[in-house]
Length: 155
Image (cartoon, rainbow, N blue to C red):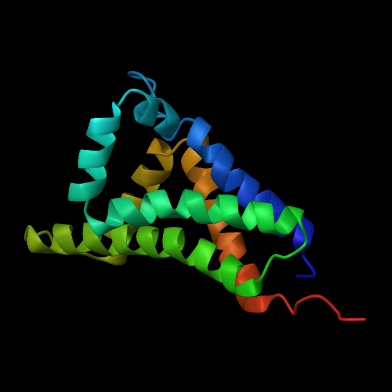
């Protein structure tokens, strides 16, 4: 990839988001995924993975893919396909979440207009902390690099 440094930073941001706060609420403790993982026993983690919905598996896989992409970038073997795959999971998951939330509002009998969806997004931006922004931002840029980067020139 010709944007190797940017791709490296995006994958690093996704991994770093594991250790950052995902909520920006001043009312209580913030949600930090790594602390949540550490507080679980191996049996609890195994049970979670066995019974997890696909969304949780995509969420967890995004960190594994980011780590693989980061390592591949370090050795100079990154690929556009891996960048595309690493970015597509989180972006798709967020898009599905927004669509699901808007359909839940519609299902409840509340008419959904562009203003309501805008209000929903405004509330989400107030709630999201730096970890969530690093995760989705890194993923979105990796997805774009996977789609638009021309690749490295071969000598």
